[in-house]
Figure 1 (cartoon, rainbow, N blue to C red):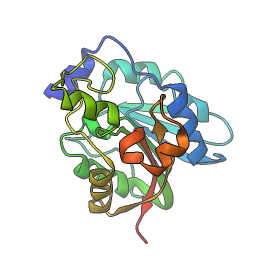
Figure 2: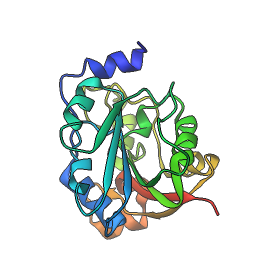
Figure 3: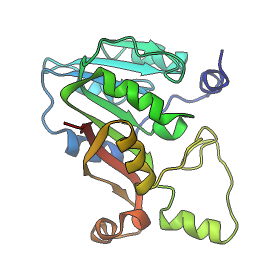
Length: 215
């Protein structure tokens, strides 16, 4: 068993998703019917179960066996897999939509995993990716004051091994043969949204992006 798998198997809680992030994701998704959907890092299926019905087929993968056992009860299928060491158990171009919510910051080699995501993505499909923006102003202030401590959950979760901001995120996506089509970021709660849109690298709390294959 890898150290990563052991870490997430030993987690007490099964991850959920905030209402704000869910809203931002759904705004990018639009109308979802008759689609093959992969919830990558599905947790307990909190997001994937929303797509059940309307002709959709919802799959989930997660490194945590405990989470997968929960997800199996609410989506079509769920598989326990360490995607950093194993290939996804799906054919090329199998999925129309892939959702990766707060996942890439947990990966040692996100580019390698994104290449596998690209493989199973339909040529006309897209991926929704969310990840914390490490350079949000509140983090800059903490670092300026010499404060940086990992926590059990949240922005500085001990499981975060990569820290992204907009430039590094774009480079990672581009290096994977993908492209960013649009953003719909979650902005810091104390900042007006119009300011966040003007200066996302300063005021976006979470990067929320729609990504597709380069033509």
